[in-house]
Every structure is written in C-alpha cells, then in structure tokens.
Length: 225
Image: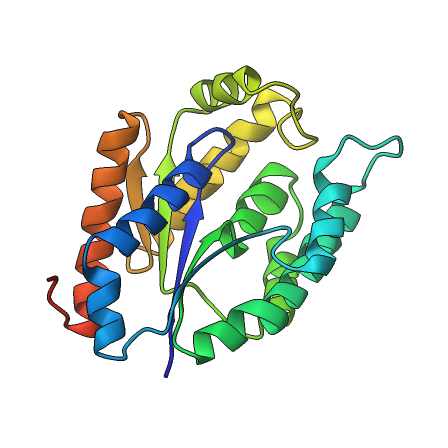
C-alpha cells in the first residue's frame, strides 16, 4: 500500500503553514478521509515539515533559522538542508508512505531550488544532485504553491514578531525566490498547482480543497460520503 505525499510551498508569509493545518482539518471532517480509510486505501493522515520533521531535524532547524553569531555560508546552508531531508525521507516519509498514509508537508525540494538556487545563486546541478541523494528519488505527488507578492508576505511575517534568519534576508533575495517558484510551477504543471494566496484565508482554503478533491478522486476514484 502506497500513500500520497502532498507539499505546501511558497515565500515567507504566504500562509502555507496555516493552510496546511486547515487542509488537515478539512480532510478529517469532509468525508474524504473516513471514506478512504473504510476502503483501506489510506491508513492515516499526517503532517510534517522541513526542516525539522525528525528529532535530528529539529536541531538542524534551529541552526538554519535562528540568527547565528557565526554567518552560515551558502554551501553549508545547502548541506544542512540536505542532511535534514535525508533523515526526514528515510526516518519518516518513506516508512509512513509505505504504510499508506497521506502526508501533508510544509516545504520540500522545491524550496531548496527556489531559496538556495534562485535566491542564493548556487549551482542548480549541485542542488539537483544533493536533492537526489537526500530523497533517493522521492517526489511529491502534489505540490500546492501559495503564490503571494513578496512585500505582502514579508509584511505578514513582521506582524508575527521577531524574524528568523531567512526572513531577515534582503528584498532582492526574496524576489529571486519568488521568481524561482514561478519558474518551477511553469516547468512542472502536472505536479505543482498554483494557489492565489492574495485572497482571504477562507477563499485560499476553498481553492486548496478543490485541488485536493480533484487529486484524491484521480488517485483513488473515491466518492465523498
């Protein structure tokens, strides 16, 4: 039994973490999950994140996001993300997918390409090689890209209080990251679904729910109810 791997992506402040939790609750309450479980298509619904989806990853996350006394060099940053992902894939994602779980994940490989490739300007071939090593070929079944203007997203993060190390990067960096996500969506239309994240939280959730319903029906041929 193989589960499904659904990733939420986007720039800082796009609302992906909030929408992931809303989607989790919707799946639990909408009828989809109980129906799929009754047919033994799905074992359980799980939520995770990168970095920080494992015990080891929690420590890596602190290194990556907490402002540090010693600057983290770009290649070191890339390698830390790869280490977190390798542990996450082997210790969490693959075992639960093999059992038939649906996994909702906050960030995955597209973030590395957008942030370290387009944002930091690191070599795309190197990033691809490291992603292949870290994932051993595991890709998302669906990626929901919450597309939001960078300035608006950063304004949201500032309202939350202290910014993390990534949020503190300059505007040009975040604009390059946004361009990266747009390029990835254009290059991978079968895997990446664009969600207009400039709308209200409820409207964004409804758009995501529609995309999830479409893909669940395609994967499982199941009917709600």
